[in-house]
Length: 91
Image (cartoon, rainbow, N blue to C red; front, side, top):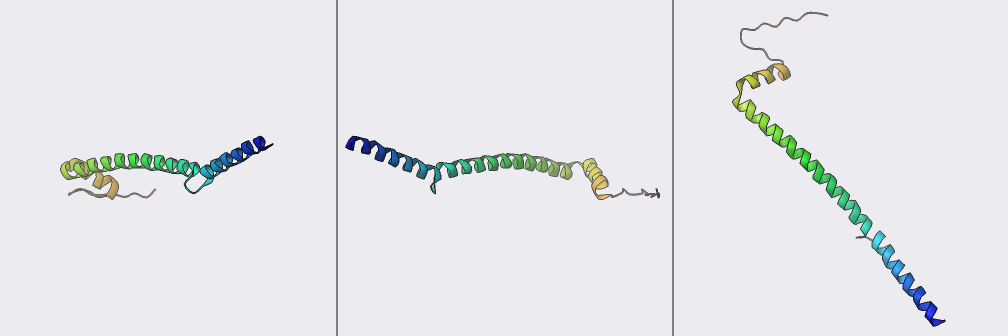
């Protein structure tokens, strides 16, 4: 009879360790969630680096290319050039 009790205790201890490992404070579930969060942050970081590169290119164009600067001023700020007249018509 004592031989059967030992495997049950061992099984119980092993199951207890597995449950603690999975649900514990530093368990595998938390580790998985943190891994997913890290992957998401890395992906966001990649996108931000691409956006920063595009913005740096745009800054350089604004500094060096007068025609580009004029186009942006007209399109985004509604500015007009010297000796130009704007006519507005009602619809």
